[in-house]
Image (cartoon, rainbow over all chains, first blue to last red; front, top):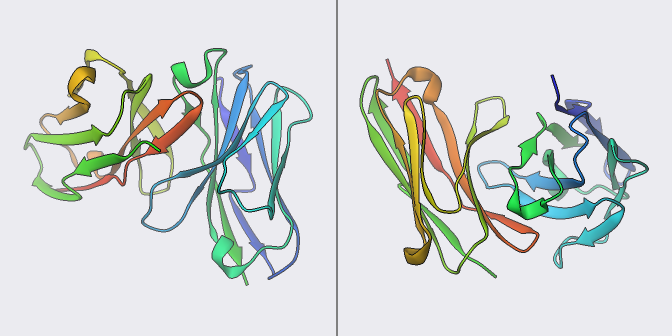
Length: 114
Length: 107
């Protein structure tokens, strides 16, 4: 089945230690999104790629970076995680129509910062 | 930016009951989706519905774009319907999620 895969499902890191979360998709979708969801809150869009074009939300902290080496993979790098970065990180994809199409979400990676 | 409101914030139902969830948005949109987030955090697409009415089994949704609201109907609720229901809207490429409605269905 075509799907969005996130690894790992749970990630523990130390305050200030860089961490990378990964997302892969077998849907061959053009657009990949990263969202942050804190406890009891709605998902918040961090950035998205349309093919290789990177689009950053205005209020996404500089501490968050992303890479998309090919269509299938996208990475979220947190350069110096703080306690406030503990959250669920959700990856999503959509087709050529981007925001005009359905978004499909992966299962998420829950990040814990010690 | 666009504002999204959902009501009610919390809803408790007895199994078998029906419910209506509402999503209001502050500006015209080109995409509206309803999602169910299960207790493990997985967001599951329910409907892509920028306008009109759709039905899928016990669920149906209606969006009245000119009046800037959407409704999600759940009929004959089951305990597996429990979780958080989000609507998400977009103008251009930016998606904004509403705060969600937390639904608890009791056996």
